[in-house]
Length: 156
View 1 (tube, one colour):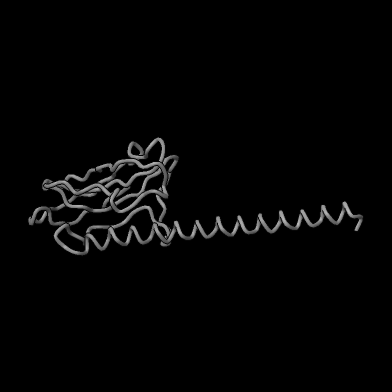
View 2 (cartoon, helix red, strand yellow):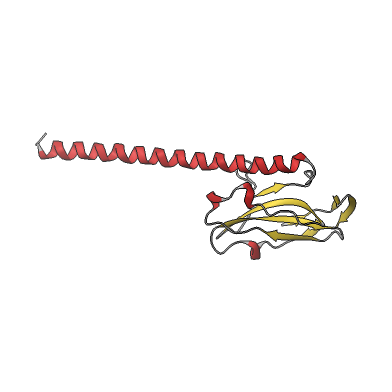
């Protein structure tokens, strides 16, 4: 992951960040999923703070985003899951959520986190709908098969 250079405010002081390239491979959990926070300190050093892993991607919630430690400013939240080899840039399901313009003292920070939760609730609802649809189709096929077996047994 590349973090472009620029200015950011850390503890009410402007800080210049140089370009930074981060490897997130050590942050990818061996099982389950987690959020990791990309952050910058007052010296302009960019690093990653890993959240606690949960059992599955679908269990991630806004409360799983690591809290920003004193002396740091948040840059992005990254969703990581077991087996992941790249970051999704899809608008409908991104793995990186930009927090550069949301500060801890600004309602925008909480709004950004609330948006994460809303997006995941939407994805979970969409997956649940798909599962319901599959179950209904399975039940319909099972009924069709029962009817055909009965017709065959009756010689129809």
